[in-house]
Length: 295
Figure 1 (cartoon, rainbow, N blue to C red):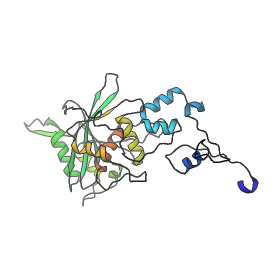
Figure 2 (figure 1 turned 90 degrees about the horizontal axis):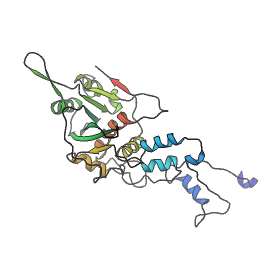
Figure 3 (figure 1 turned 60 degrees about the vertical axis):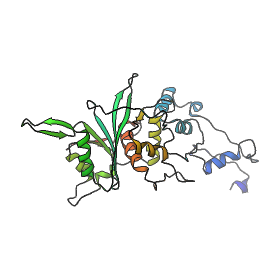
Figure 4 (figure 1 turned 120 degrees about the horizontal axis):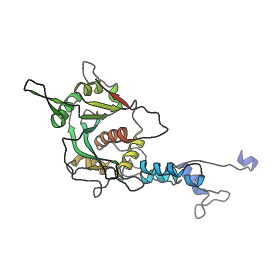
């Protein structure tokens, strides 16, 4: 139609990596890529004038620098390479030990081989914000939800006197943030779901009705390791050797935006991602679907 009428067209969009829209954009950029008859421009959200400075500042706090540039500064960002590019061995590792006086938060991936969990405790920073630190990792090959629940209770359950001179172990100080698929997945002959098994051990369980997209979860993890303001809210103990390795080596498949799960680095990343996303992610226009499940 444009050819027969010698008409004009206006293509409007938001950058999402260097895709076909990026190719169109390059056609109108002055320089070697410029094509006759094409013109391109880009405007930031601030220049649009419809979003307040307060909202932009809130976005800076909750997004990592690369995602903020894409969503609010009209930048065509490449998301290839490391999935958790904001994690830094130099800046993200803190030598903090388990504190029995603090609550325990655990992200859990229900993959059977291995069952994986990351253990976190939260501290109040001097500015009043929460700093969370991974203090442990639990990896059990060829396991199940019952087995990893017993291991968690053994290591982090609180001891209670049942008034007969005996002590029992309670999971009341432990909150688990698992894969939402565990609400329907049945892992034993009796038909119990992964979630119901966790509840039977006395844990608090916090999840959502469905799992967030992998890209959204990874983006939020990056913002916790370092947001666009340069603030770091998540740290890792040097004792978490396998987790550190996974955070450093989990990468996208060459030429795609899909993470490479063939090397097994995804399990601990997924476990931590469920905790960080379900615990800290807040979006004013997203319906509240957090669910606290009790026995």
